[in-house]
Each structure stands twice: as structure tokens, then as C-alpha cells.
Length: 267
Image 1 (tube, rainbow, N blue to C red):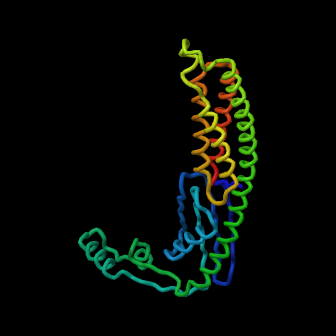
Image 2: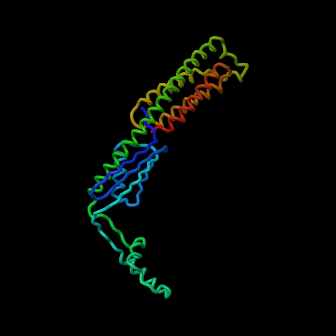
Image 3: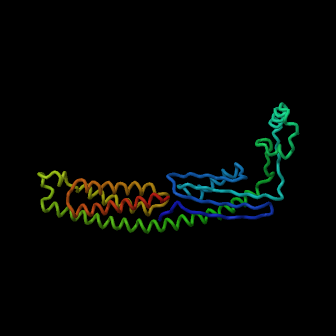
């Protein structure tokens, strides 16, 4: 089955230490592009969430994770960059118009002067993971539902191409029996026979169906095979001037174009 790349999930977990909320959304992308953001986000949490995304099997799409943490009743480690603060005070003293001393409130709001973080993050990390897994489950469910609908659409288009392929094969055999391929005097009618294209079209349809039912990410591979089907359809249109065959080939081309539009949204 298919898995889409569009989805959204959110979850919130509350504990005695505070509240954590995870918002996760994804949309189409050529590869896997993950961004994790939040006003209070420790480096260890970002690394952990990236590993968890891989573990749940998300392998393609643009994924954005927003982390919101509100702490209460938590002890902090506070670090003051004394060298930076001293340098700032020394430089500011050179200006006579700055007669007042910098207050503590002003000092702690100077970027880089004060850093603080919880002493014990184990409970926060546990709640963070719980919220993440709840949110990502909703996201994955949405992506799978989208994939089911895309599979249904593509399955119908492939069946249509298969029917057209059989009509093309029968038409080519009929043209061959009537001596169509021996008319060398009209180069616009025929350059050479198209039996090889008939075989390749059938092979590509078989490969596409096989890949559709394979496991793992398959969007790029399906896009490539659909492009090959499109190439065979263009070859039929270029090689033979026959109204019925051209109509079949044009229909194949339209179906292949539509398939490419859909599978480019498949993981």
C-alpha cells in the first residue's frame, strides 16, 4: 500500500513538573527534511526526536516538529558568563551619558550573559516522548489514509493503461498483417516497427504493479517507472501515423501523466 506525505498531529502531557505539547506536521518533499523548533529546546531532546522519527518509519517528506514546554516547580542550574558581563560594564562606563548602573533584570536579559536549564530533565524527557508518540501516531494515520486513497486512484489508472496496452498490441499485429510495416515509400507513416515498444510497455506495467505492492518507500521508483511508460507512449506517437493507435497512445500518455502527479506525493 501507499503512504502519503501530508499529515498533522498534536498531543499534550501534563505532570507535576509542568506541561509539554508537541505539534507535528508534514508535507511533500523530495527527501526527508526535518526541522525541530521550540522556545525551550535542549540539544539532547532534538537528537532524541530525530531518532524517534526514523524509528517510526518516516523516510520522506518535509517534517516540522514544534515543541512547547512550560515548567513549574523545577530546580535550575544557572550559569553566568562573568567575562562577558564584566566586559560590557567596562565598555559602558566609557560613556558619561550612561550614569546609571545596569540592573540585575537588565543584565539577565542580555543575550549570552545568563544561561539556565533544569537540573533533572529525566521526567521532562519521559513526558516529551509520550506526547511525541501520541502526536506522531495521529500524523502517521493521516498519511496512511491519504496513501490508501492515492493507491485506489493509481490502481485504476494502471488497469486502464493495461487495457490500452492490450489494444495497442492487437492494433500493431493487425497493421502488420495488412502490410502496414512494409510501406517504405511514406516515411511519415512509418520509420520502423514498434514490437519492441509493445514489449517494453507491458514490462513497465508489470514492474509498476510489483512495486506498488512492495514494502517501504516507493514514491520515487513509481515516478520513474511512470516516466518510462510515458516515454513508450511518446514513441508510439512519433513512429506511427495511425489514428486508432495514436488515440490509444495518447490515452496512455494522459494516464501516465496523472499517475506521476499522484505518486510524487507518495512516500
